[in-house]
Amino acid sequence: MNNYQLPHYRRILPRCFLAVAALLMPVALHAGALIHFAGPPGGPELDFVKKLCDEWAQKTGNTVQLISRPSDTTQALNQFQQYWSARSGDVDIYQVDVIWQGICAPHAVDLKKYYKDDEISQYFPRIIENNTVKGKLVSIPLFVDAGILYYRTDLLQKYGYSAPPKTWEELAEMAKKIMDGERKDGKSDFYGFVFQGKSSETVTCDAIEWVYSYGGGTIIEPDRKVSINNPNAIKALEEAKSWVGTIAPSGVVTYDEEPSRNVWQAGNSAFMRNWPYAYALGQDPKSPISGKFDVTILPKGPGADGKNAACLGGWQLMVSAYSKNADAAADLVKFLSSAESQKRRAIELSMLPTRPALFTDSEILAKNGWFKNMTEVLQNAVARPSTVTGADYNQISTSFFQNVNQVLSGTVSAPDAVKNVEKVGKRLMR
Ligand code: GLC
Image (cartoon, rainbow, N blue to C red; front, side, top):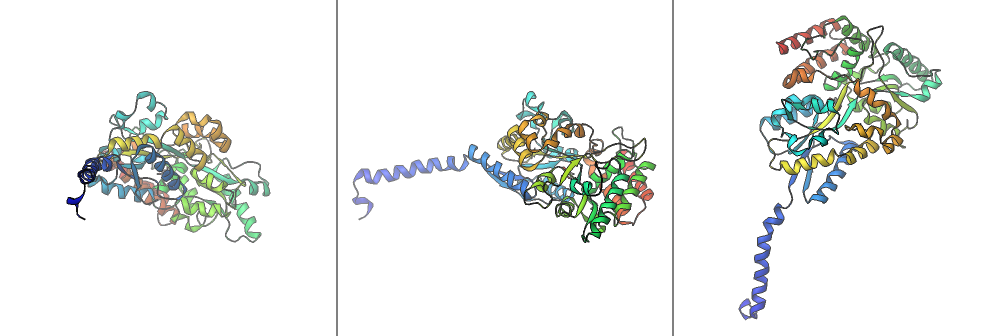
């Protein structure tokens, strides 16, 4: 039987159905935007963010595709700069480092148009100021980082220490005593201290803490003075060099965050310098050091110039100026950086919120009691010279991290290293 033999209504109805479907199809296809998000590089943070993106997608009818990026900050910047120089719309949202704001600014949507003033004032003003370049709100703070000292409470007790070290000298002494003792007990892989020594942004963070804590400044000061060539900075770098191959493994010159955490979390180090994320991972019930460690502020340098230092880090969300779906992307940025999402991030991943109000949240404090000390640490945290150098920040940091890494590896002396960095700094500040 062909269509001509069907009764009239049976011929017309399917056609009507097809016509209506054809009309609706484009609507259905365009109801939701596809948002490409270059978020975290991997690990539990990526799983967490995927979960949040799924929730947002479900709520809004949009779709989110996560784009992978290297875990090394400097390499991630290289990848992102390729997208930006091609003015590519392939990524709508970037998770960007606190130090890149001057670099990102020309490629970012001004997020002010999506936020009311009283929404912006819920974030730390210092970070909002950092993320505002020539009046443009380049990105919204997602989480903040500060370098902290992790220490093994069980081992401090075993070796007769009642408190964590107050100065770097004390740290080196305690680390040595514990390391020697543990090795005598047969733990031949045990070290005193692990940190990040890799020739990358990672050692810029550690080394600015050493230098600043010795009273040696911040490489380039906010008033554009290039300060790195000074005796305190040299002493700080020499002290750090003395740890390599003694209390720290020689390989520390290739470590960024995760390799140092791996040594620490396997139970093979008395102390570690790292960011807050390593807390939740170390306290996981499956972790060998769960319940055996605590965190505190990093040690001071010696004498009257010595002060505590924590490098200010953290990540932000930026909407690409080349995005074809900026409104939907901004909505996802809002959702990911909302108080509720940040609270979950703080509880599940021990990452510090960018909203001061959350530091007194009882559920967050019940899980991470140490957060109550972190507002003070953050207030005094040392910023890398990214505001004063703006779009040129990566040049000064590259010179600094390469030279510091060479000091740690023993191929350049500390006095030569600071001279080399000074030269680059002075050229940039000219
Ligand atoms: C952390 C910090 C970031 C820093 C990076 C270096 O991710 O949040 O600011 O640049 O470590 O490895």
